[in-house]
Image 1 (cartoon, rainbow, N blue to C red):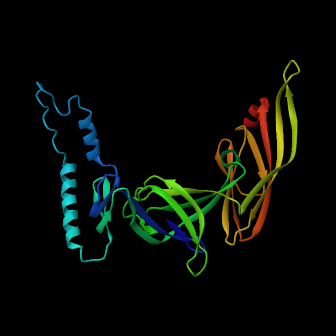
Image 2: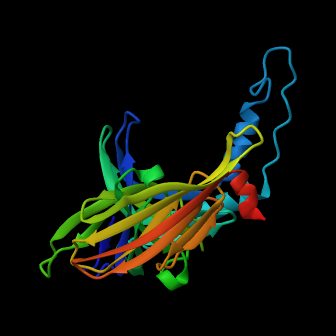
Image 3: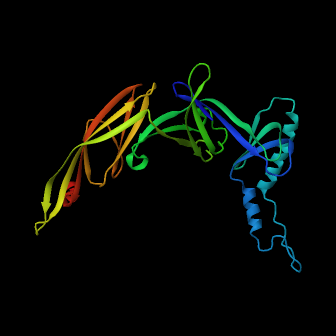
Length: 314
């Protein structure tokens, strides 16, 4: 769960783990541990399961027992260590203990929980306040249609008050503080895979209605025809004039990224608005809008076709 501040510059990030008991028996006063990352022990178990006769059969000499890896030995030692720490922590308030084990992390939630069969319980795995975030609105007609899509990004590192351990994957539901009484307004949600340390994450929160981008074709013409020796058209230029309007109806300033894709890598763009060339046939315009404001810009796109493309390259 992510809770944005009113200015949407920082976010409180809370992680939860839902434990569901479908075992057929009640678990009373059970301890909860969560492993995040790639566990080599599971790989070794899978390899044993793929053996032709994993359990032996009459008349066949059993295969020698697979040696225990150093990682497995270390994992058992760490689990025993966690159990000792748990016994010593019963008198303290419940907290989350995170320990690095080679290429994965073990989250130990102190205390115990009782979960009857057929029931679920949500347990908190971490709680970090004031995580700096970047809000970005994107418009790309070929990818998102005519909608503006909101993205939220941050990084799992110390600068963002994170970075001690990977973040378990799941679904992030984002809310925004609505007033000083603690009321929240729903912003959006996004699923994600687990985030390693020092990894950037950009979450798609879905389309929004309070930011609008409207490109309009204002003019179109063709010129600079070229003809072959039979009199057929072998090349030409297409000139399109676009006007792009952007409206921000929100009470906060926003950053909007507008991508325009062309149908050919042979083109020329004339505009007073700054842009960045992304690849052979894509450009990106980035604009900042104040609260409850609007903006617009125009550009003239010339695309070269047939032999005119070769002339343009020369």
